[in-house]
Length: 122
Image 1: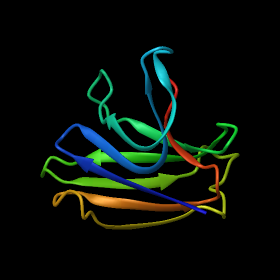
Image 2: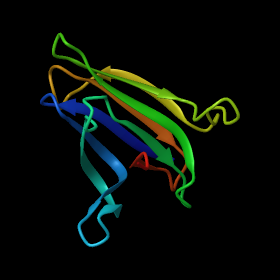
Image 3: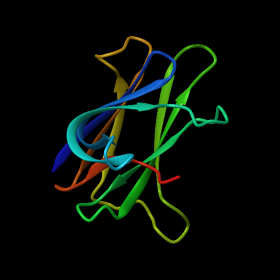
């Protein structure tokens, strides 16, 4: 099992500790594997960005939502991909107060080896 911790920082960043993909300037995409990452939290239309968990073959497993509230705090949710793909029973998640940011909840995910945090394709 791997542990992936997701929390907010500032009002526009989502930070990840655990297996993830980071921006690769050569390919202009999130393709480099890393053990810690930082992601923009907003799309061009000021809509919160959704992320995903992927397996070792980069097939999607679940969606992660990061929400920055008007009161200045972060919240997170984990959900299924769509009606035909339920949340895998092998993924467990809890939410706790972040040790890394005083105004953020922290989503703590336990998932099978090979699982990584990733951006949703645009």
